[in-house]
Image (cartoon, rainbow, N blue to C red):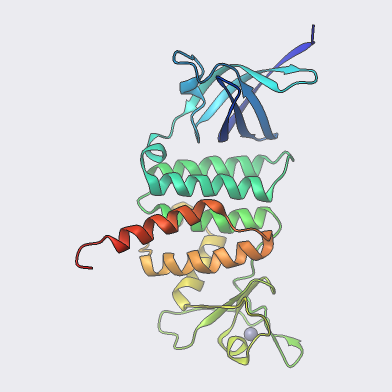
Length: 273
Ligand SMILES: [Zn+2]
């Protein structure tokens, strides 16, 4: 008989997929890394584990380590449920994106800060008035943690062969746009943007969008919650950060495509069109 060892961990359920007739593989992010675990019988009608391993919930699980097989969840106890994320398409899509980014940027390594960031972001997504602002804040902190911290405070452009490095203080009344340059890893001052970068990846960045990027990077979410976050800025940041992240991961997040399509279908079906 295979030798079994029991251990207990706490983690956030970031993925699930069906396995066999009644089982499910659960992807659990913990402070000690990512685990793929088998929950046997969880799809049976009266499974005692089912309600304790919902997507995005934080749960405590007792695991049997089985030699040459999946680690198996013996018991599960939910610590935090997130019904608001489950019930809302937009929040649910953003939560999937949060999980997808964490799993893409980080492989198996233990990272307590990542675990805390993902868990607290999901709690914010559950409750925040503007979930799109939560996701923008998360992206900046995740990129920093993954070693891809964008430089939004100083210009990353070059002029006449010299690094510009101008300190950037965007103001609402600024007449000229700034830029986002994924290849150079940050923002361009209006002069460097106008001077023309050789890369087609550069995006224009409004003063408002740049000052929000600086704030997301430099502040805690609670310090930003009271400020108005215009939907125009949210849309602009979605576009800029999608390009930035796609460049550094060489990958397009699947999850936000679903959200874009959903928004597009709402726009198309809105009254008066
Ligand atoms: Zn510059």
